[in-house]
Length: 325
Image (tube, rainbow, N blue to C red; front, side, top):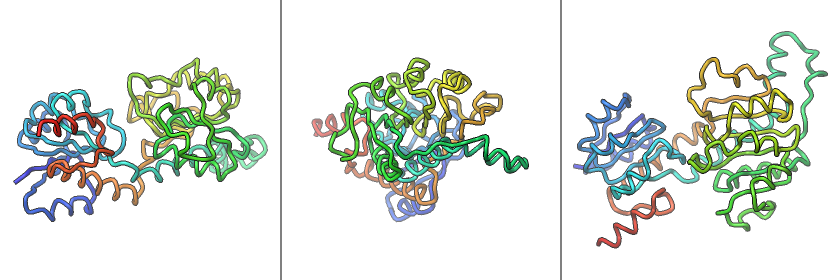
């Protein structure tokens, strides 16, 4: 009997896939403190995890584990280098949440462009005259820079194009024929200088941490809009607050933050021109089911030895395993 440790619950549709297997057992762990995880993973053959930290020390105790299946597309909560050194594939769910994140990106973009937070607050406070003070801008004719042009970035491009936006892309790894309506730039600086709106769709790494810093924000046109539905830490939040206060950046829409939950005294909270959501871009009813099912399928595929390489973050481990056969 192979054991799967499910760190943080999956939807019933996902757990049903485990129930259908007579050779698999699973346990759902809701307390993901390190000490508790250490007790549960010792005999695990597979691990699924959402956004809980999965420390190297916990994985070191899981001597039998054959796959770590991430419920999502980011993996900064998993020690990838350590998993690779152990030959453990780490999987993600692919494009099943791309629509949800792309729609949230457009929601934040529209709300930021049209002073949505401030106008909502004004009406609730009886200040109907705000309609003549807080004027929005149209997205039509604006230049959108997409930093990252994977599954989510391409879905955002489709929706932004329907609003009449001009699409620029900065992604040295993307196919330049992936979306006929996009123009590619060779440097981030070139894209920022041309952008009215910048939207981030890249993973967090040491190379991308604080990528949008004070200098990058100064490079943007005055009155630009910043959107981040990727990962906290890509935007230097202190620099963004300064740029908002100076008026160089018009507004922002943020779903992810360097520290989560966002601390109650954080300056972003008191800035009315920032639209905030609690790292929820991927969390729709449809997406949660799809992500859960794919997470379960990846865990089972890891146990069965038939992983889809396109969903494996550290694909080198698959070649090593094949060479050893």
